[in-house]
Length: 265
Picture 1 (cartoon, rainbow, N blue to C red):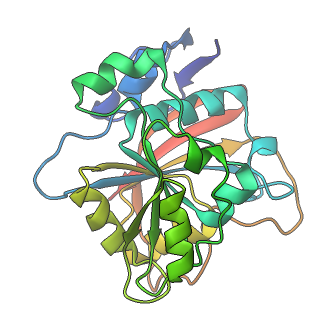
Picture 2: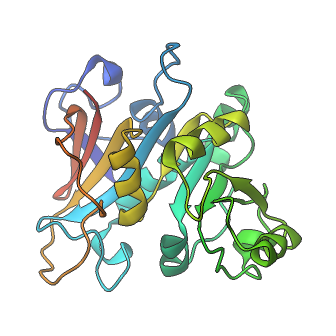
């Protein structure tokens, strides 16, 4: 098990979390879950959307098209924790294809906490796809513990919708045309009882959430690597008119990797 410790003061949201006094100590899965807990509902927002991404020092979100080469064992522990806390994991179709997405797996470390929170055994995987050009023979669709969702537009090809539903996926319309409207997608997920939302990108999808102004939190791992090249940043697509400011909520470090958490200011 790796060690995590804050390198800067953290907010009250992590007060009392082991290691928040600046000591270098080992964190259990429960302690990581406490550090990354979703905020309590306050009546202002129906959902809370957080993103989890990794970037190299020179801004690359991928190497050879995948995030794994710039990740670490601890980054994957944080990745697993964030999934274990979420109701639903949202990913773009290209990311699902490139990263070889599989169904979320049940984890004994988080089973009781999920039951206490009224959650199912695993988070639902929700794939955002306009074309529905997906391989429905993959385990993500044929053998998940809970049915995979596909978020698409009203203009999606009927034969692809039928193929998705035949494979066991649930198709949710979240746009009037070909694509998905980010705000409408969040409302649709909330209507299904999913309010603790996690997106793992890719960059195009995260860019859409940023542009729509619906992202509440960014969990960004800064990898101590340099790749050069022309890899994507963590968010792509059209830029916003005015940069949106987020506030640092916590910062953890392990073997040169920085695990930052920023929230909407």
